[in-house]
Structures are given as structure tokens and as C-alpha cells.
Length: 389
Image (tube, rainbow, N blue to C red):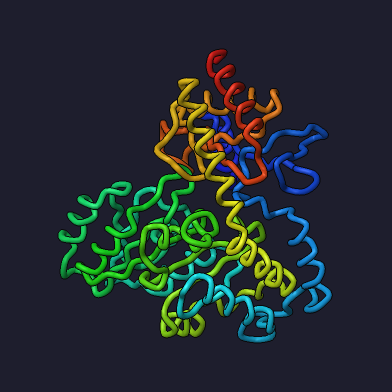
């Protein structure tokens, strides 16, 4: 048949231990999750500040629906931009210290929109090798030339920029603030120097840094000692530490005006539901003002790393809520995750192509909802399963 390749490729995924399928969870996202009538301690969520099921946000969504309805009714440039969207935009600008901002339905869509909008065949895109798939895919689809520098390697970035000098009309350097699979942070100050010295724009994708790092949760750029407004493009999502969904892109007023006039993903996508925008505003306020959430999370991170060291469990170089345990083999990583599930721990095996070949890992994520006893139990279980395997 014409589509035999579908079954062939699916079978190849199964044989390589790379097959994926959704797991249906029931009930709210939180410290505990229920799958197929079994309850697990959840160590796979990006809900770093424990906001996704917070009663205040549930109430905010209900209030937002009563005040503004559920659906936005259209794209932002038609009927989809409600006063609540304008209020959220103003709030985020004030919190993050940026000049202008545009809302998007997802971080994936926002990243695709930026690269497609800005870069043409005479332009250069330079990305950290471990950037998110949304950035990499957009780069392959764009007409521009794309090169990748070794992860967080400023010498390699400098070499590539020198090699490409004079060959591109416009240059855009992109890095994540906190890398989603490794949990380490970008050297944003050094990236900004490279961009300035080479007349390039710098974009930071701070999906995993917003709310968690920096003064009042302002993110990775502020944590690095700079201002978000120092970045030509700063984007992040509301679906990680803020616990809701959607994303934004920030920059100069001229850049955001250009985006809203020429970006097809922005122009032709239905606006965020007003009730959702209202909830995001409440989540942003909580992230900004409730510093105890970040303090507790940092204590949990330190406890986890200390306990792993005491139990000879090797971790990556991460001081964030993302704590990878590199196994290497996809099959062994899946086996480790499956055994932990039998012991009541929900952890996720991350495999190629999400991460490089031979770097499959158990991606442990910590949230404010966890307690130290939860972490002690997890580390004990990991050590036990590693010994058995």
C-alpha cells in the first residue's frame, strides 16, 4: 500500500525503545497524579511553582469566565483582543520590565512565528545545539542559513560568527535561558556581548526560567544580572511555572508592531480565551509576589542534589528544578522509569530525538508542591532500581 512506511517507521520506533503514547491522567495536576486508578508521586511536571491546581487560580478562571466569557471569538486583530488581554499585557510589561509584548497560544507557535517573520535567504540564524525543537524546526523551515554552536560554548560561537562575518544581512542568535532537558543555564551575559560585538540580535527563550529565577521571578536574564529589555527578543510561556498555558513575545514597540502586522501565526490564530488571560494575570501576580515558592523550590533542589550525591547517583550540572539522570541507553532508561512507576513514582524517560543519541535520561522535575520526604523516597527508589538493573 502507498502508506506502508507508516507501520514500518512505527515498528522501528518500537524496536529502538523510542515508541511514544499518551498516558491518560485523571484529576488535577499536582504532587500526586492518578493514572489507571493508581496514584503516583509526580516527578515529571513543569508546574515548578505548584500553581496549576492552586485554589486561587481555579477561582480566577471561574471569575474570568463570569466576567469575560470563555472563548475570545476570533483572532486578536478581529474580535479576539478583550480588555483582559490588554490588562494582562500591561501587567507583564510592568513585571518583566519590557517595552512591548504580544500574546501567543503556545511557545511553539511563538518561536515558529519569530523565526519565520524575521529571517530570509540572506540572513543567518545561530542556535545553541541544545535549543528546543520548536526553535530548531523553525530554523530548518525558514529560508535563512542556520548554524549551531556547541552547547554554551562561547569560543565556538565566536568562531562561527567570525566565519560568517559579512555573509549575512541580518543575524539572530538564539538560546534557551534554562535548557529544558539538561536544566543548566545559558551564559546570557556572554551571549549579549557576542551579539553586540557582531551586530546581531539576541533572543532568549525563557520557558523554564520565568517565575523560577531572578528577582521576583523575572527570569533567567535578570538572574544573570541583565534586564529583559536588554534582549532584542525575550519570550516565555505561561504553561510551566505559571501553571496555565499560552506564551508571549517581548521586545521593542517597533518589533512588536512589526510582529502584529506581518506574523501570520499571530494574525490568523484565535486569541487566548479571556478567562485564561485573566487566570494568567493572577498566576503572574502570585509568581511575582510569593517568593516563598521559589525559596522552597531551591531548598528542595539542594536537598535532592545532596541526597543523590550521598547515594552515588550522578546528575547533570543543573541547579534548577530540572534534574536529569543521564543513562545513555533508551531501553535501560525506559526500564528504569517503568520500575519506578511500579514503586509509585511517576518519572519520564526522555529519549532521542528529543535528546542526542546515547544520552537518554530520566528527567526529574521538582516543584514547590513536593516535600523533602518525597525526595528522600524517590532517591532511595532510584538507587534501588539502578542496583537491580
